[in-house]
Image (tube, rainbow, N blue to C red; front, side, top):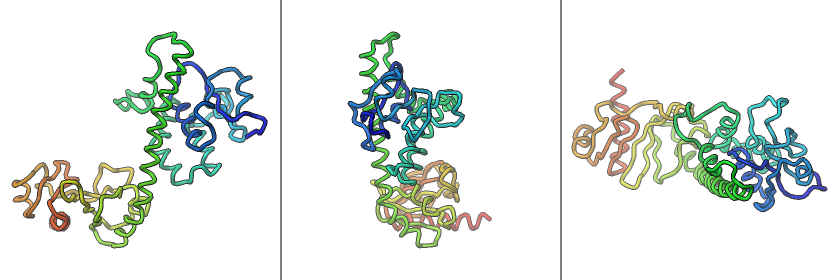
Length: 296
């Protein structure tokens, strides 16, 4: 960053998108800019005054803190959001684990959407990028003041979302040792005595090679028995479903069918069952393993 430039960032004026909003949010999170140091302009003379230029200027030059992706000379798949994220990784504001998490949870989508690789028609649902675009004033020809006010409303919304993502990541990291301790048991059932975010940690800790098929964990209304996916990317799949004849049953019918006292419910998708006690959930896992053993 040039020492002869003022602290701040320049983004284009007019209608805005999620990529420059998230780019600014990241710079703000890293402490490199203040909110009142975000300037909206397309004037090259304004670009020259400030340390960061984002989503405008037709230059991608990390060394000089210019992060645009619209020029024909740039052939990559990043938007300004991904460019700034990579810059913060290189500068040590993100460690590799946090960087990967942010890419998966938010930035890859923003990059893909802004570069036309994903659309509402493909996803058949509004996305984060659509939500940000909805902050743009409804009326055509909105004044500069109205557009700037809308931009900062979107910024505040996106900043709140981003901070909550960071908080979830930090909480997950604090729970990693609990998951690792459970994984030290090479068996087919992982038992947790507290509610923890286990799924991401399990696979980050080498879960693809672990022999576990089920987890048992407390929930507000009892204890859950849940299947473990084959991989993190295939979260809707299962290494081993729960018994087919349990599916969709609840209360007395489920308790009678599974033969476990305190059985409360089994999802028809066969990926989760709820029991009144920890012992009941563990017994359910053992019965499910035995069921599949005899199905072979």
